[in-house]
Length: 409
View 1: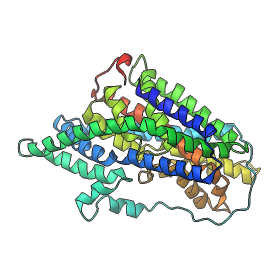
View 2: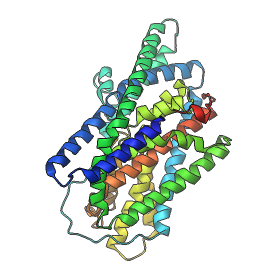
View 3: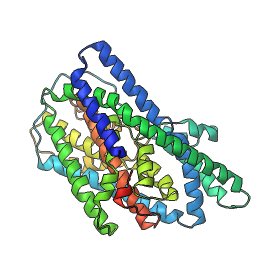
View 4: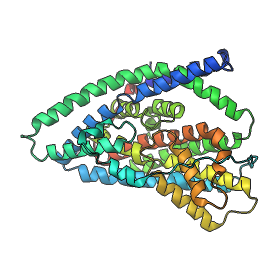
């Protein structure tokens, strides 16, 4: 059975279980919440060892083959372009289609989350380099350490050959362990999807947030079903662009129900290797960077959510200068969400409300009940972007061995 079919079956069983189990019972709901959190942690378990060792090998080989700068350049360009595109689509779609206003409730003062940029920069260089591989959330910390090791080990291949050999062996070992974990997660999806659907049902039943969910879904269909295939067709000259989306089904399913950018990395990495044929030296470099910086999906849903809140408070048209401000801040802050693998989209929304001020500081509370949906769709967009973006970089750097669709896992 194909991997995507296993995940789809797990999700279907989980949704079915949500109708069968007594989910209105607090004890049952607590068990589901515990199992969901446990299985998501299992998914994160192997991420840092896999990314750290593979990045060492990737940077070493890219430098040795003089492809490091080209790969870095293409990765940066695709991340920048995709974030711009998704933010633009989010702002334009909500301006064209006026969503129904959300009933305003009494705002209860709530603490607004801030992104500590200074702390993020300092965390890149912890007191000890070995502390870099202990941070399971901000992957850039361990990636920077891996980059330094990979770069220097390529300076004298003879002297540092044992270092590369050790990293290479560990990378292969962790890859095999990660494959086992991805198989287990397809079963764990039963509990994860069940708990997600129970919460989703509670959010959607009143009908207040249904138009917003429909807009997210339509934007996703337009981006992934139309825009990304067109880009693949013309940028990569690929006559069958939808094969990339076919290889992305399982990662997109997992990302949607976990809403976690780190959990999905091993599965995306596996499909990049065994389905799309992206070589290790490319995927070991691109996938972590896309996971950390390519958060255009978060900018898309946050901009839609903020403009929906604005219109719920006011019947006036939004000034053009404010639209530019929303676009610029959503786009800019999306690059700082790397240390927040889960829930980054809603945190971005709270920051938008706080920075806009004018009485909007706690207005994000209007959408707080729908934070699950907001974060799920942002993770969905970001995972699709990582899969498509890594494929584009691999094609442009010629670090890919194309597989027929029959051999996709």
